[in-house]
Amino acid sequence: MDVRRRLTLLAVTIAATPLILGGCTADRKDATGSAPGRAADPAVTVTPADRAKDVPVSAEVGTSVSHGKVTGVKLTDDKGKQVAGEPREDGSSWVPSTPLENGRTYTAEVTATGKKGKIAVGRTTFTTSPKSTRQAIRSTLYFAGNQTYGTAMPVTVAFDPPIPKEARAAVQRRLFVKTDPPQPGTWSWMGDGKQVEYRAPDFWKPGTKISVRSGLAGLPIGKEFIGDDDRRSTSKIGRQVALEIDNATKQMSVLQDGKLVRKIPVSMGKPSTPTSSGKMVIMEKHDFTTFDTRGSADPYVVDVEDAQRLTWGGEFIHAAPWSEGDQGNINVSHGCTNVSVTAADWLMGITKVGDLVTIKGTEVQLDQGNGFTAWNVSWDEFAKGSALPVPPGLKPAPTLSPGHPGAVAGGSSPAPAPSASGG
Image 1 (cartoon, rainbow, N blue to C red):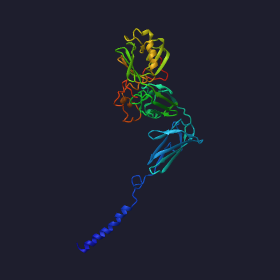
Image 2: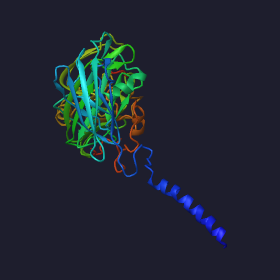
Image 3: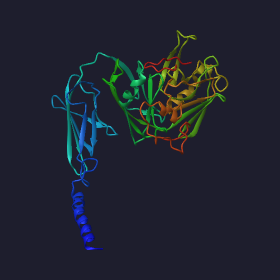
Image 4: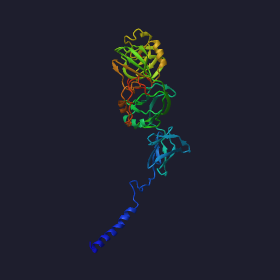
């Protein structure tokens, strides 16, 4: 290589060197706007919007955070009183423990902490709406507090008038269920919007504590309605008992913890007034009640003892001394399951509201929503009734048969004031 060529190569190398050095020492940033190796600062977005007016008293404090997590929420009213609450499990918002008050101003302060300990605070001040003039939808929570329920007990909420389909997701977000130990489930709506039920994929485990909140007070429901009230209850699950009734044999099998403990002869609905077949749940128990069907096609009034309701339409298990000769042989009732006085008294002592009752082999099938019918469909079918996404991993345990009443795991329209027809 001659001298001229060597000088040319040296000039190119020297000329290129500053460009390479410049590229290495420049303050490059990643997609977040931060230099490599430097954690991005946390940022917080809070809702309702600052200075928002006419905010519903059902409002939650929305907490959206980037490059960090929420480490504190403080909500105070215009008198400086702090409002109690807790975050949703998914972290999307912070929920006041009680409804806010109408026509009051609140300030929310949300603190987020980044990976390097940096703090960001988001604030908003908003004013709630005056008392609404909209019609309140009446809701009824069928899960009383301080009770011991059977392992098939769903949490049920009924509505009058029904919830429009487009409003069901918003209503469902305000229905809260917590279980201890954890046993997650989902809500499922009846097609007519009159009733929604909550259950887990498998029966509740005995000893489980279930806390429910129906936080609907002031919630806008569609364009015409609001929610009526905020209700809470906490109860526990007792031992596992289930009843199987077979029309072919006219026998009831009573199982405890999956084991047969007694067989009881029964007489069910005659062909003109058949008993429903399906999986239902004991809804309520009465030592004494009166069946009054005056105004129906088959009017009668009769006093009965030891009656356990199975459907809104008036199907019960009850003592029927007048049919003891037919029990185990022929169906003679108006749709109820008749048992002897002795058997009815014994059943009242062993069953609980929330125990599963399975009836098979009759002329008609149980209508969904005619009682607590959460177990009358498969889990996949039940989950389809949710107005919100159901976690895909939420499935029945593979070793159990969740539709079988002995497994140990843990009228067609509902009405807040059910009829006492019976038969």
